[in-house]
Each structure stands twice: as structure tokens, then as C-alpha cells.
Length: 214
Length: 214
DNA sequence: TCAACTCTGTAAACACCGTTTACTCAGCAC
DNA sequence: GTGCTGAGTAAACGGTGTTTACAGAGTTGA
Image (tube, rainbow over all chains, first blue to last red; front, side, top):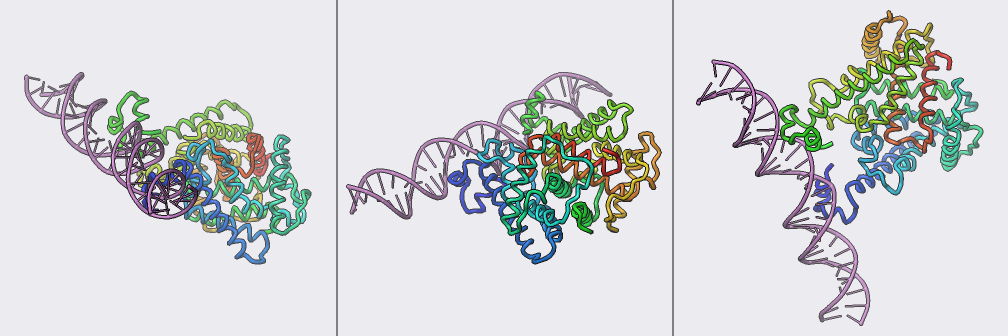
């Protein structure tokens, strides 16, 4: 969207927008924040609508909600989740990852954390262990995740949400994001006639790999 | 890049470009094709440099090559792998997925096909089976993949590259793409100080899940 | 009451963008 | 020589982000 079109929609002339935003970049940045807020509200509403279902169902619902939102708002998805720093300004006071992390990310990730934490014994699904150089990063993320989960009721201690589990949460995000982006951008290696089924199947496997039964 | 800047770089004036391209969209589309050709050449060179190593090492090398390329060329990556149809023209004679599929996709996917085909007994890694609605799509992709693999020497029959294996190849692409895009766009949920190690770990798990030992 | 000030908006201009039109001019066939 | 074609240019059009100068409305203070 162009600056003038936005101004026209508000019933204002383009230069008047500069009273509220420093530049087009600044406007996009704030738009980005608003989108994240809306998205997280939407996903939280989905969780709320789930009621007392098992956590795995809630994860399922949120993942589907994220996909539906992305497909319904490809421009917003591109802006928030697939734009380089030069689109939105590299020298922002807050770095970009925080935007995703603070607003939307929490919804999905803390839910994933709850899911894993609720699982009795998260046995390491692979024999490969996490490389040493990731220890610090994962520990930091573990802290964020645990406090986020505990904010929403449950009591989770670091031992039930170990390093392997944290890595798995990140991998879930990689797959969720990967599928949704591929679908939004139409970059699957062949024509997928029922992407929803493929998505559901992937999420089912993801949840299954944590230890839940499909 | 602007049309006038491109013209300036070629030592030409902007309208002269319209002798060669119908529009900016058309130019981007052809640029897209060129980028795909370059990338696939680069990845094929990596495979060639591998010599007679085991296929899993070749997959590893190609994945790392793809990541390195994407991080070195974020604009090109965005154009080819993360742009919606409105950026590049929706009503193109060839649909977009073919571009990725025809040029770059083959390199990675046929290698993945070779890897799985070379594996003795691809036991289904999960209890979840592939939904019925994907049968036709996966069968079509299986055909493409098998002919692509057989073009490069080996003799692969449909039974060794079954539906579950095909699904797994697609899932590998989802994860490879997901991680690379997240890194290019800086959208991991926390600051990753050594993304390369994380990437390597993911690829190692991916290969391990097929049945190879890490 | 009236002057000063701020806040919000506009009009005009600037440089740049993609694109079209009209024109030039070299090279070549006959 | 006379056309003709291909490749290039200059000029223009509407649109863009952005800056500057200006206008009025509302508030404040003496």
C-alpha cells in the first residue's frame, strides 16, 4: 500500500501522515506491531474457544488458525514474517526478532511449552544431541518459555522442559513456519491439491513425535 | 532494484529496456529464472566436488550450500523463494511453482530421492499415515522424483521410494526452507548466536530420521 | 480582549519511479 | 539512393515518498 492511498483512506492528505509517523518505514513498523497484536488476539481467542480440551488439541487448533490467518492475509504475513530489514528499517530501536517474539511468538511457543511440559516423560526422540554452542541460547529461550508458560497458570520447572524439548519446540516452529510460508508463496515442489490435509498431517506428526498418540 | 538503476548499470536508458522486456514484472521473472539456474549450477558443483562420498554427506553439503547461498543473497532468496504472485505477475504463462521445481528444486529433491532410495529399508518413521487426499499429488511427485533420480544414473523403482518416503522428502524441504527463511528474515523466536550449528543439527536429525546413523 | 503559541492539516514543489510516445540514426536489402 | 528494420534516446505522464512553507483552529496567559 502506498502512503497516499493510506492517507486517502483516512480522509487525509499524504504529508499529514508525517505528523504521526517519521517515515514510511516507521509507519510499516507500527503497522507490523498492530498486525502482531491482532494475530495474537485471534490465536488467543482460538485457545479460549477450545475450552478444556487436551493441550495437543489446542496446539492443533492454534496451528491451523495461524495457517488460516496467513493464507487470508498474505501481505500481512509477508510484512511480519518474510521481509528483510531493508523493507522495514534496519536501525530500529527494537530489533525485529523481538517483535515476533514479544507479540505473536508467545502465543504459539508458550502453548508448545505447555504441551511438552504436560507430557509425562519427554524421552529424547533422536539419538543426536544438541550441539554445545547452542546451550546458552537454548537456556535463555528455556527461561523465556518457562516464565511465559507459568504466566498462564501451570507450574513448570526447568527439568520437565529440558534442552532437548526446547530444541524440539524450535523445530516445531521451523516446520510450522516452513509449511505456511511455502503455501503462501506457492513454493512447494509440486502442485498440492489439498494443502490443508498435508498441513494437518504434518502437525499430527509433530505432536506425535513429542510423545502424544495420534 | 529500480528499472532505471538496472538500465544505468548496463549503460543504457530506462525505456531501452522495454526492447527486451515487456515490463518490470517480466524482467523480474526472467531474473528469477537466471537466479534459479545459477543456484542449481552452484549446488551441482557442490555435489560434483563431493566425489564418491556417501549420499548422506552430499545431502548435507547441498543443504549447507543452499543456506550459505540464501544468507549471501537475501534479495535473490526473497525474490525466488518468498514473494507473492503480485510481485512477479500472477498471470504468467508458466505458474510459479514450476520455476522452483524445474530449476533448483530438482537438485535438492532428486538428491533426497537418491538418499532415500539408497537406504535399504525405509521403515515408516511414524505411525501416522498419509491422508488419502494426498495420494494423487504424492504419486505425481513420486513419478517426477523417480525420473529425476534415474536421469542421474541409478535405477530406482517405485517400491523403494514409496508414498511415506515421498512425504518425508517434502517434509525435509519444509524444514530446510523453514530454517533458511527464518534465518534470512531473522524470525527465530530468540537470538540464535550460532545458527549454523542449529542448522547442521537439524539436517543431521533429518538424515538420521530417514534411517542413517548420525 | 488580544496576542502568542501549539497542533493539525494543506498546497506546492522536488526527485525519482514505471511506462508510453515520438523521434533519431546506424546498418542493410534491393 | 530509397526504403526498412532494430536499437537507442528525449520528453512527457501520472504516481510515489518526502520536505518546505503556509493557513487556520484551539488553547493559554496577561
